[in-house]
Image (cartoon, rainbow, N blue to C red; front, top):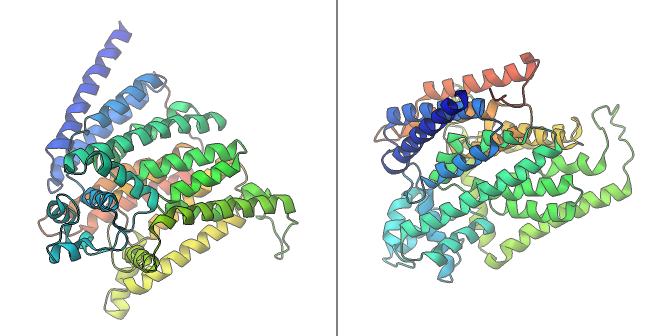
Amino acid sequence: MIGTQKNNYVYVLTSSTIILYFFFAYFLERTQFYQFLGSYILLFGSFFYLLKYHFKNEQLLFNISILFRLVFLFATPNLSQDFYRFIWDGRMILEGLNPYLYLPENFINQHIYPVHEATALYNGMGELNGSHYTNYPPINQLCFLIAAIFSSKSILGSVVVLRLLIIFADIGIIYFGKKILELLKIPTATIFWYALNPFIIIELTGNLHFEPVMLLFFIWSLYLLFKQRWIWAAILLALSISVKLIPFLFLPLFFQWFIKQDFSKTINLKLPKINIKSLSSLIAFYTIVLGTTLLLFLPFYSTELINNYSNSVGLWFRNFEFNASFYYVFREIGYLFRGYNEIAVIGKIIPVLTILFVGFITFFRKNSNPKQLITAFLFALSFYYFTTTTMHPWYLASLILLSVFTKYRFPIVWSVTILLSYAAYSNEVYKENLWLVSLEYLIVYGYLIWELFFKTTLKLSTDAK
């Protein structure tokens, strides 16, 4: 009787959740912040209930995680404009044009339409996006090209193809995620902290951000690395970097994995002896990663590529501000003492601080076993996101997946509070509510501090009742 009642709850909850996702996919506008907030909270309530009471029923969790994603299949994203640029770039390649060399606005201003539905795509992506060179790496561009091949004349058709690629990538993440969890002796259902998370479903499947493709290659690479197949791991890591550049940040952290030395107890800078064979493997690993990445850019190479691409990536440090944490504090200090926005200066300092932090944990923290290594990835990326000038919601996906393999859950908490950043779109004129941004980060930092210093025991899974 209890089992039947429990199953009835699942059917009712799943049906209700599908209705909420359907509302998100086909009716919600990003200016409707309070509807967004209410629906989002209800979805997280459903998410936590399913994990709490059905944690051991992995087939159920897998089935509904895919079902929830399929709700979005024919929806045009209404919370992000980036997909218009994805489609534009893919169709440019299909027409034999290098997307790294041309600005969409130049074509439109000259009344030249190089791809089907050029005007609609340009209007959709917006003037800001259309006035900058593309910054999406080559494997990401391959995904855009696939959408163009299957649907070169329909925006909705392209959206469906892009979404299917993302859903297949998430299935791969579940598969390899479970394999890594088995190696770490963590319950394999823990992967559903990622796969069932409403933030992941809405931001990635719904809004067509390609973090799942990047993360698929990344955790596939980690799995092979943990199985001592580091050559193929290096190739897959390069594929991951060639979707999104973020994994490039992790390269120094592989040092201890190959060298197998504890530098944390080094005294007077007297370094322990390094095995030549281990060092040669490390160098070969880095060479394969960097060489494969460069090789993937080769089809797009031109003398203008490096300049256009570096300028486009640099904009994220020099010009853009959104949902930042410590940067906003530094900015206010700059206003106080200098009287104007110091983003040009602070934006140059942040990468340096990140490099120093990554260097510190590379040598002065143990990163020689799988769990230690993934935890190092988690905190390296967290440091970067805590200090960056621009923290778009979908960036958080990497932290959520990494946290699954560790004892830390602050990224899950952040996946709830980051919804407050959408208040910036609730007005006709874009404007952030810094009180809500402060609340978002106060909760995240509070939970992080508790996990680091006050939480003595942690259940790695939620016991089914």
